[in-house]
Length: 256
Image: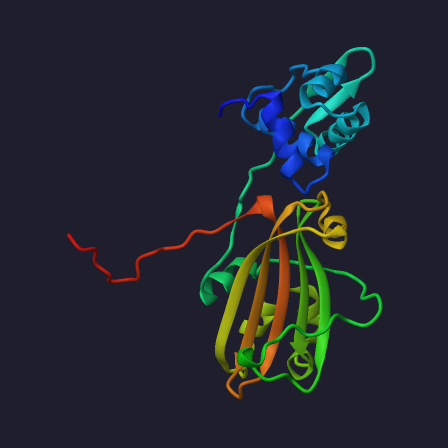
């Protein structure tokens, strides 16, 4: 990839909603990823980076803090800053676009349940998506890979469904547990995705910078009586996810 000039980088910063230090960190992370700086190699000094990016010294230090927290660099007093690793693979999580793939992809997930502070958020459900259940249990959890969070989930689960297996619903992915209940007849399930940015609450939970890109899923499962028994809003770190969609239906033939 062609290295952009300092003026181009500064112009990009002015258009971005992300904090300057996060943007600088992203550029430096990219240089490590692309091999411009290799493990064991000393990177540019604070003074050089301050001049290159046209930002304050404190901004460069904050960017360095992010990279050091991610295990990519190490700073040595009097010697400089050295690359110690490479960023983990990006876009490792394919977002499922059909029921069987979705259920299979989450069967081994172990959610980290978070305490619910105050009343749960209002149920996000349009009339066209299904009728509301008489009562819901609210599940608030993080999904992690290693020790890093990659998704934050808010799930409203119909109480009569939750009460069939409370322990499993609190220790496994709720949608997977739901799929294993033979007496639950599912009429339809729908999921939508939008691209968003992290507000201060999501940034804190997912350990990302404010306004970092996110992928946001809204999933609704309706039983055979037309009741929405599962309503979930899940926010993923943007750099973790990817879409892989087959554009041709089975049996479809292209015109010669």
